[in-house]
Length: 293
Image (tube, rainbow, N blue to C red):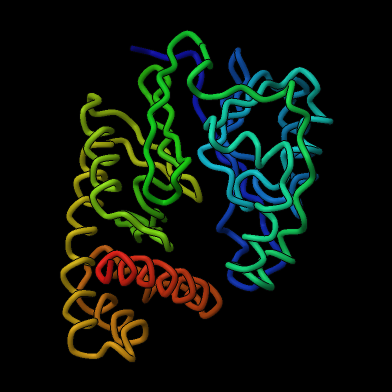
């Protein structure tokens, strides 16, 4: 099928070292015009300005892959700027968008200074939100893909797949790429694999990742990610058994040595490596919690 639109990515640089090219939004200029995730409060003005610079003065839909602060924190002012936009989000997340106090407290507890840099979350009017189970749009199928978050969604739109973080964190490096699991506590391994398998039931198609980059073959990338998850489980279990008091540091080093999907870590600058080590530690902690449960 030939589509009359092509998604493009708007980078949303942050003030945090290493986060200059880490967050952004996918945009389909339509019609209808769709924005997938809006990023945090700290960069929402830049997102709005970038859309206007692209000649986009009306947004019809916002699709939230999940409600974490770096994906949905800027939603309230975004909706003020685009008053016709309707938000599709997981039904379980709606109450936290309407009253974000617990979401903000959880973000502070998990991300600490990073959450402060992202800036606090503002309440979203309930009448702008629609649960994913009630959302309807021609060509759209919404898949529940928990794993990175219990309320995670992926969006199949015509021949495209917007996978959020359910297919890993992906960064292109020329002809190759970097792929990392985003598996913070509480992490459920089987649930995550089920989500990958659910996306694999779709025919092969272009896949669009939450933080940056896309790939023309969803099956290739999903199978890479599935294999990676099993590798991480095996290697982290080995480290946990041998060095339980040093599991995070030792597992990080072992994964960087043994996981070919992480090879491009060597090509990152210092701040980006620091960022990736931070998130790797969080992901390893998720596996540790799962393995100990």
